[in-house]
Length: 180
Length: 194
Image (cartoon, rainbow over all chains, first blue to last red; front, side):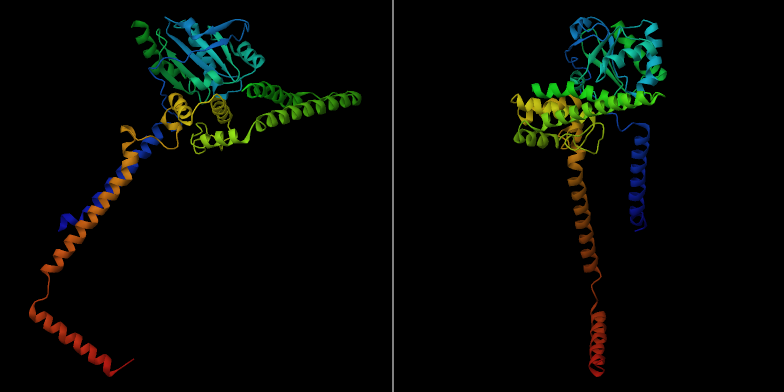
């Protein structure tokens, strides 16, 4: 009889535990981050004009055999300001090619941004109307895709690349892909 | 399809006009000011004209198609503003995705194909009605499971109470006493009808 009286208490404690875990989870994980279904899938094909040389194009096929980063950026993107110096510093190490996808931007603004803050990109391509962005499931800027030599997307970084993200998340994955 | 692409290229200069206008510095000379005001008005008028042109270009084509676009967009979650559908949201991405839906419909794609296209790129999260699969088992089955647990608990309690009621049935003496008490109560009531 006494044990039975404890049942409501046990249920109550279980519920508190349940809510507690959910709260903790919500704090540690950004609810705005939506896992991409494109991970380990072939990267969507594109052929886009280059930002610096509009008459030249770059397509996905050109990057075949290389491990590379596709960094989605725009001059109007506030978080990109935080990311940009990190990318410039990383590009100087020449670890891998970084292709910039200038997303829904104006050419002049994009060029001015690179002139002012430094150009970390092996090449920049222009996605003025955001169509390639849609194909890559881009829903915010900046986003960065790590693509392997077979043209598969292996990782997607949502939000700016901070020094921490670079060291703990991206670099280990890049090294692993470059080894294999 | 062609018109949508045209409007996209039109919208950008329109924005440039609005952004550009306030950055013009006012010169000290009154004569120059007039020119600047004239220029600014022209710019604004142009921007307005372009803006107007772009809205009519989008609204004009055909209402049945637009209704269909809205119908599909209502089933898609806006990923920037997650509590709105793509039909409701004015976010840039929502506009682009509506354009995508419109173009795919115009190209003869079915609703199913369009939704599949979105899921391929943005995941199940983009759907307001997530599909029934192992990862969503708890989501879909949870309420039913909770209902079953509640019903089970209810049935169990009812059974316990019934058993309790049977074992604590009154003994013959007790029922005699109860009858006597009830009877007296009745008599009392009859004596003093309140």
